[in-house]
Length: 238
Image 1 (cartoon, rainbow, N blue to C red):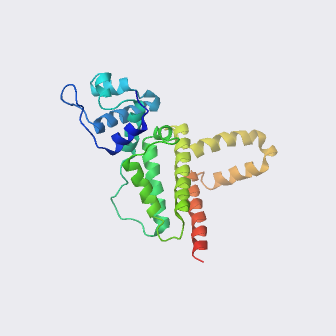
Image 2 (cartoon, rainbow, N blue to C red):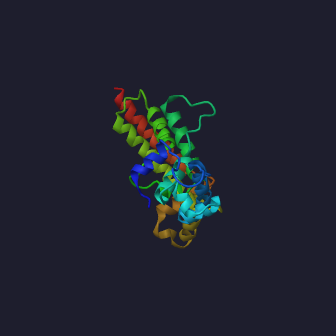
Image 3 (cartoon, rainbow, N blue to C red):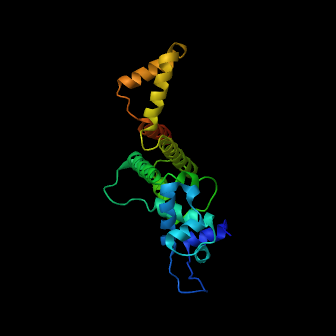
């Protein structure tokens, strides 16, 4: 059972037909996805199984199969529900740069809230309406910039890659601290013993500590990506 792209498309996009056999339906796809998300948020994606989700919902595993054929389709539903529609509340920034920065920060927030989505969004797969809505938002932010469709897609891939990298670092660091601060502490200990062998690294770490040791990897990377896009957009305007 499971891992059927055509069935994943139907579950994510419809039409949603009610089970034709058995008792009156007691579940719906959103409730099923939310149960899976609750497990994944606390235990990671490895903790999600059809059996666990069925138990969470108070039904048998076979009853769950009447709605979702397997874990692959279940995870696809979970991803789209967890990421959700792009936040529409609040004033929208003006200009492509402000809109893309805002988009990237919202995406980072969504990934940090559900870190297991890193594992669930690797490789070719069927995406749902919420996830494609995010992509539409980012690509449309580059309207009027002169960038081609392929260049816009590549720009979105760059931003998503940065979001994923920061989320991965945060997941590895855990709730106790920021990944940049943890790495700086480890390197500082090494430099106290080995600094003479790596003078450039020792000097850079010392400078970072003097500036307050702030975790700036996210903002630094985001702004440099946007700087690079600004150069390309400026070239297109000449």
